Image (cartoon, rainbow, N blue to C red):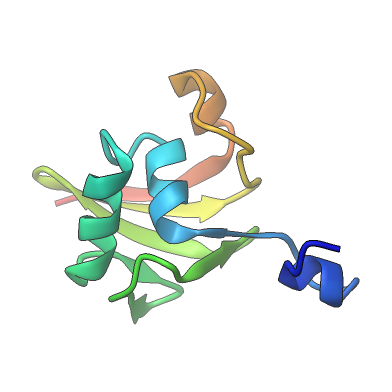
Length: 100
């Protein structure tokens, strides 16, 4: 047993830190940029402002992510295990809204 929440509670959904998720899903070029994006309060999860890079994201959560001139609203369909190709990253979320 390695102490993860999922190990302690068999009914808990798997979770991933928001900074890792933003990097894995290619909304940030590197993990440091992803952490700064989250900690500066630019990202919202389920309508709530995120100010920490360690906030856990689960399948079904809705994220609002600013990127350049656009704001993306996405629903997490699956949690990626690692950073991979753009096509594989896009298969982990569905775009609900893109606009400025």
